[in-house]
Length: 140
Ligand code: FES
Ligand code: FES
Image 1: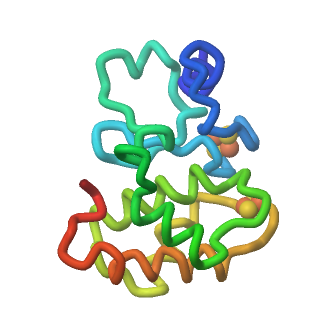
Image 2: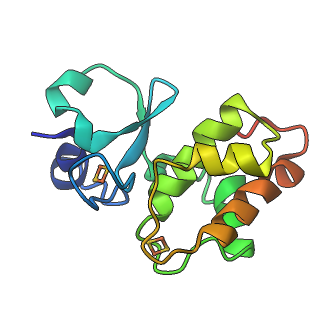
């Protein structure tokens, strides 16, 4: 069983999406041990004992994470299918580069495909996160 199927079908964490099953689209992106990865590329058993963050774990105390807020406020999504993967790729990017340039943002989400082609809104949203978090670490 693939990790993405385990998350969705066994744990019922359906925020992680399946767009291709061939490691191309990034809809299945999760954070494993602090690094973004495509959960359709791993067997669930290989992830046993690893620390995994899915989109369900991002909001805290019923408050959206700053990245989620930025997507909300800056039209970072259309249908929303790619959004969990985009948000988690942004989470990883911002944990490594707290104030990324547009080029770094585009490179950071280059493994994620949006079928609505809403890339400009996504890039703008991620670019607004540093202002929102100010001194707060977006990776925390
Ligand atoms: S479902 Fe994993 S990359 Fe598309
Ligand atoms: S918002 Fe529809 S796939 Fe990206």
